[in-house]
Image (tube, rainbow, N blue to C red; front, side, top):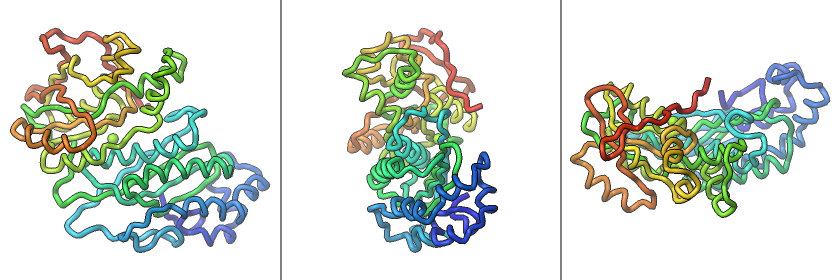
Length: 362
Ligand SMILES: [Mg+2]
């Protein structure tokens, strides 16, 4: 889906745009815009402008043999490593509100992909980017690149190619990372008696979404930090790397803790007991919501992009010593059981009675 060599506008293939026929360009347009619209969107000047922004990342990895500017990128993975590859699409009005800034759209579109790599224990290295834009807006693209490259540079990730088309706003990122051979962390390897951990705090992004949808109020002093949790999730790359050879299973929380932990339970053919009053809550969430509502959001709200993982009990002290060197909160919230099913209770044994539905894509 990226690095097409002909027939469409490609970040890898910028010199071919002027030789495209109108017919071939039209094939990739969502609503058959007028010829004039296409000429405006895909003139050489506009395209130069766009490739100028996307090709000027201040991050040059020595393992990138061919960067943007050819039919495809060429990279050189380190010896004795395996590649982890993931992709995610963010669609306007579905995954982000139309009012979201281009900086935040870019940041999040990259962050969710890096989060998937973190959940595998991978070190991110390269990304490709496919953007569908309603119009070529220089200010929008500049702000988008600023958000994208800010996060990419923080983790030494290089944009090595992509694709640009005209249509309703949609962003697809493919991220590629590497893992020492055999050390990738799957969802399917959780074992009975494992301890279940999560990073960070849960429910903040869900609260931000409720605020933006006019379902709740947030006091001004808490608003910016809560909105950042939705718009700029921090991929837990360093934690993921420390989980190699320690964690049995891991997943990132995109659809809600219950929904995502259930993926681990199903694929590992085990069950779990979660202590609801052990869930890590931010000071903002505790201040703004009743404890019942806070627990509900922590269990079910998506978009936090924290990691949930299981480790064998005998590695707990080794693991906690490793993680204490990383500035990221981590909390043990339960245990894996042999018997299938998810038990939600409080530490005193009382059962949790609240709702447990997470985000559904379809
Ligand atoms: Mg994921």
